[in-house]
Image 1 (cartoon, rainbow, N blue to C red):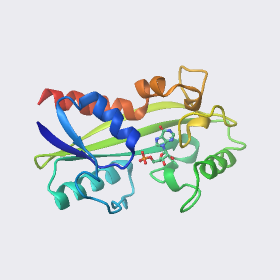
Image 2 (cartoon, rainbow, N blue to C red; image 1 turned 60 degrees about the vertical axis):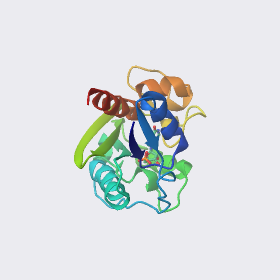
Image 3 (cartoon, helix red, strand yellow; image 1 turned 30 degrees about the horizontal axis):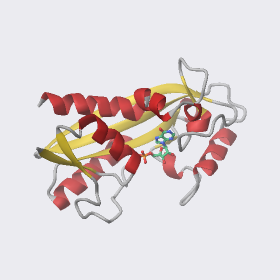
Length: 192
Ligand code: IMP
């Protein structure tokens, strides 16, 4: 069975991917390959960061690898927080701080459309390929719901009248930006 490292330390992401392709591929975590260092993420785009992480791990640890990177793109803020979504309110900030900052930036703004975008870069036998998933929606005026993580309480996907944080994990994992990108990765891996 081909082994592929998923360059993440997030156990939920690992389980989600293993449940989808774990019967055909051995999905290794960073810990499994002995990578305990912080991965470089210095590129100006979501695609660039995902590529940087996948290439770094693949080249340094000599493994097949894929890495994901996600950002929230708010149209009225010309794409911000985008690639800076995790640390929008500053280094070591909490998700709460990021949401407060974003709501504040949009205080008097009527165009509240936004989208989550995930890019996955796969480096398999020295070939690189990228997969994208995105979900568009609106930034709510205030937080709704307790589930999920990150910006979930203030993001309502189009076609729904609840926020990501009001959905069950199963429901969100069926239609999220990450799920769409993972589905493309899964389809590709199953086709080779
Ligand atoms: P990462 O690249 O998956 O680590 O995501 C970067 C940042 O985007 C996270 O720290 C969160 O702030 C935000 N983010 C990513 N995915 C989601 C999501 O599904 N819901 C809400 N926020 C997210």
